[in-house]
Image 1 (cartoon, rainbow, N blue to C red):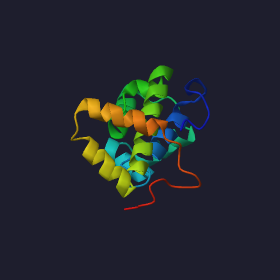
Image 2: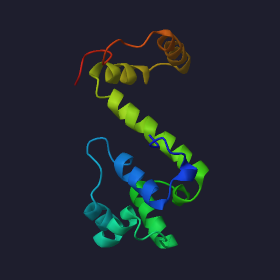
Image 3: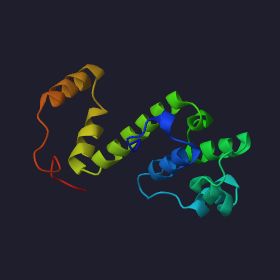
Length: 143
C-alpha cells in the first residue's frame, strides 16, 4: 500500500498522491483535484501544483486543511512514523471494504458482532488455522 517506498523516502507530493488514491470512501474512487480544492477552500491549480511537486512547501494551514479533508493527522505529511501507521490503517480499511463485498463475509461479520468476546476469539482462532482459498475469491458469494 505504500507503493514499496518507505515513508522516509516519500516527499509531500508522494504522500498526498497516496492519500488521494487510498483515503476515500469505499463506495467511490479517488477524489479529483477539483473535489479536493472545494473541500479545502484551496484553488484547483494549487492542489494540482502540490500533486506535481511544483509547490512543495505548503503552509501549516494548507497542511491542516488537507489533513482534515483526508481525515488524517497533519503529522502524516512530515512524521514518518505517523505516515507508516496511517498507511497501514488505510491498507486495512481498503482490505476490509473489499472483503465486505462478499456477502458471506458480511453475514459472518454481522453475526460475529452479536456474539460474546470469548466466542469471537475462538472463531478467529479457528478461521486463522484454515488454509486460504485456492485460485480466486473465497466464499464465492458476491453481493
